[in-house]
Image: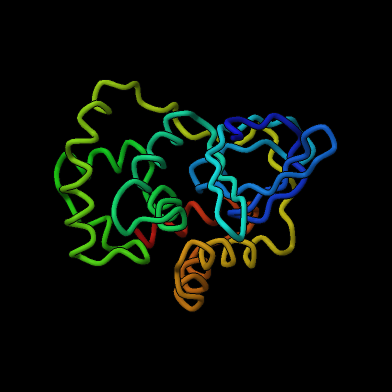
Amino acid sequence: MIGRLSGTLLEKQPPHLLIDVAGVGYEVDVPMSTLYRLPALNNPLTLHIHMVVREDAQLLYGFYEKRERELFRELIRLNGVGPKLALTLMSGLDVDDLVRCVQAQDTSALVKIPGVGKKTAERLLVELKDRFKAWEALPQMAPLVLPSQPEPLPASAESDAVAALVALGFKPQEASKAVGRINGEGLTSEELIRQALKGMV
C-alpha cells in the first residue's frame, strides 16, 4: 500500500493533482484544505496518502498533514460516507471546524454541503462524537497559508474554480453563482474556491 508520495507537482486541476515520482506520474485527489497549501507547479511536494483498491480502479487520496488523513479515514468508516463525500466534507469545513461541529452537535454547517441532508448530518454527528473524543487532545493544524510566491493567475481561474466545486458535488449553476459573486481580479483558482466555499457553507 502507498502511504506517502514525495515528488514534483506537475498538474493541478482541483481537486485532482498529478505528481511525478521518479518518472512515474501519480494521479491524486485532495481536499481543498490541502489544495490551498500546495506549492507552485514544478516544485517538490510530499503528501500523506490513503489508497483505495477497487475491482475497477486503484485510487489515491492525498493530504498535506497526517491529521487530515486520519480524519478522512474516520469519515469513510461511517455508514454511507464514501471517499468523495469525505473529501467534500473536508473541503467545506477544515478539521478543527468539523471537530467543533461534532462537539457542539451542530448540523447547520453540515447540511449546506452537497450530499448531506439533515438526517445524514444528525447521524454523522452522533457517530463521530465518540470517535472524536481523542481528537480534542491533538494539536490543531497550522493556519492555512498560501505560497509566498503564487503562480500567475491563469485565464481559466474562474472556470477551474467552478469545475472544482462541481467535482465536490455542488450543482453547476450553484458553483457558477458562488464564483460569480466574488471579485476575482488577481485571485488564483485556489483563492476563488476558498472564498466561494466560505460563501456557500
